[in-house]
Length: 480
Image (cartoon, rainbow, N blue to C red; front, side, top):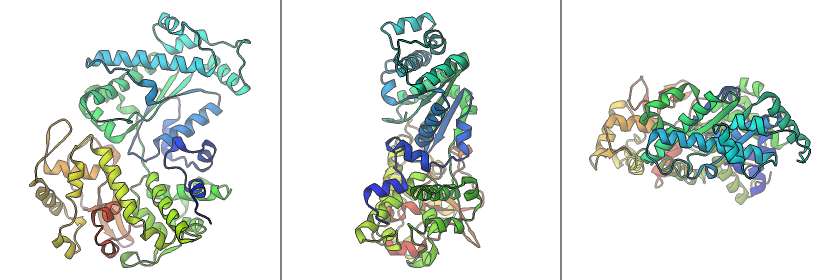
């Protein structure tokens, strides 16, 4: 096939869901188990996950599906909430400002969606104590003066009958710096939407937050423990990500697939679906020689769908340059360093708000000459990892964004939490890599559970650009 830019995006998808063609997104979207945990009639759902995990894509599909079921559905973006709570550090006033602001945004967006916004809507909203649901229930009506298309009329009828609104709040980490006031604003917002949904049965909030943003809010404000039961940790298994890729490729060729059937298949069976696009075996050197290509791909992604999109888009461009009709070993080998540099920069950008010197810490994990000579640069026992970090700390201690000093074990836990290092164990079928379990995300304690540790393969080329071939000889692939 021709891997030009248009076909590449059609094939693998856009890396940002909000920029994707909605029709194409619906065609290839794979509903993981998190989808039904989020899209239901529970008053508050907070979707927490790493950047690139698919939170915005989930929201885009859910909004479209709910609107298709005639539910009044609204999306609140960062531009809508500029200025709310900017001028106070009083936490209770912050919550009140958020409640007022969110109610006003919901009321205005609902009225506007039906073409029924009127001049003194805000003063009338205040007559209902600022409660958007009560205000809309009394104000919205089937009005012959307003020309609604059939789908809008169906949504309005459904609202008047059931008094239900779904409100999605997405992309709140845009411009996030992790400052005390940023954290306070997010904490106050979570308290506010919880209060609104409790006081107005019929408003259903879904809020997406990056995991580092939620972590700082959760650990700095004890009141957020009231929202903890509403948190959905969004994560993927490598098997689900491979199924996701199969669905994208099959839908590109216009073929229907059964997601449940695909999930039951072994990864070697799933590889057959990839053959029109990707070479079957990796023909390079070292541990990778003759390995099934799906194992190579799954070893390089950090359990984030966006990683796979980035990896294959880069490889597809290279294949296009080479005039190749498939993504081959050569296509992949030539882009590993660029892919690795991108993932390293992503991590630095994502977690600088939690540990300002995260870049210095990560680059300090480069293998020394002695380690490289002994082929020990990336795999550590617990003692070796702590020893490596102590050596890095000799250049200066590290401090969290709140000013507290980080000790060696906390730095180890941080590297595990951000997926820079993974736990690993040798098995007969390959390396078993374990990621930081999301339900332990709030712990900065480093605990040993019988595994060694290794720097995630995605970062290796960025840390060792001068000798990329050695990586193939050292790096063992994940078990399927």
